[in-house]
Length: 162
Image (cartoon, rainbow, N blue to C red; front, side, top):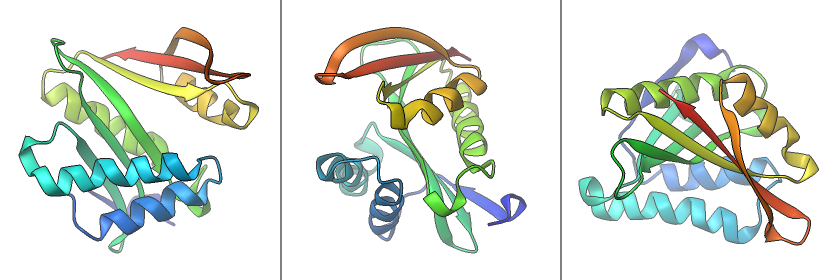
């Protein structure tokens, strides 16, 4: 993958369901239920169109989706957004695509008058690189919810003011 050849699009396509499943599976981090959830959010966006609160950004190299984000305005807030998913195909990790996707997602949120973005991740050892990624992108660890996902698997919540 050559990061300079990546193009970005916000419009979701039916073919993105398979791309999302492939990308999320490639990390080997996520359970079958989590993979299903990632696909479910995309399916809702496809079904509901603009009525869906989920937004997507896809990074492609010659039409092949290499990574994506899913985000949305948090209901009943005045400019706070959740970053539901950011994932890059395992073969493309550590090449800058994740940072580019996150920066472009932040730009979209700013353009919608968003002021804050929140991301959550697991405390498990395999997620240390994810934690470092958020921190290197200017996110602050705001909360620690002990044993949130399961015993020994706590939740970290990161935030960034835009």
